Length: 215
Image 1 (cartoon, one colour):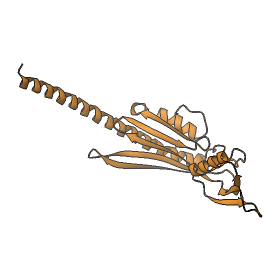
Image 2 (cartoon, one colour):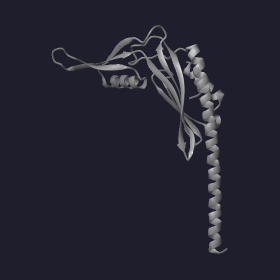
Image 3 (cartoon, helix red, strand yellow):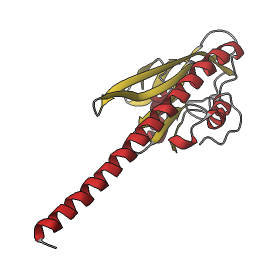
Image 4 (tube, one colour):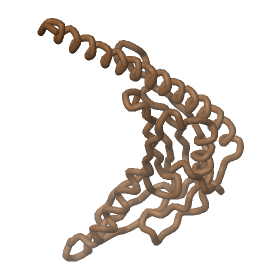
């Protein structure tokens, strides 16, 4: 075999490999888009039903000492955003959001004080994670003016969400769930082949406070 024939053979092998890779990528893109359509339809229907049911909310506390009142989940809404990727329009992410309100009455105006760094870190993190409206005040000694504590005045209202971000190249969807069982973030990746109503039912169970295998 001449050197030119060797180069032709090498080029043919590379072309075949690239063609296979392109076909595999096209297949993953199609499967990912189908999975996103499934999630979008499920989130839309779930929001409609839960707005009627008004499920119970998680047990909440900013400092692990002062418990919030009994909460419930209201105002469920779904959203989907797309992007241009590889000269085509595809799903970027889909989301389901809701408000966590007191079951009885309106959100309460209350406060929490902290004077140790671990407590301050915990409270500020949870205020941010729950998107809680608040004001921060310094509590100082009346005579020495030394800092005694930090007081956060806030409303007992928070927000929860699930965000599903598509990874077309990997053929996966990355789920980020905020405040399902308290002030926390849980994340998991699922291959698009697994995404169906059975799997999403497990997520719905977690949202309404039941045991679910989604995570």
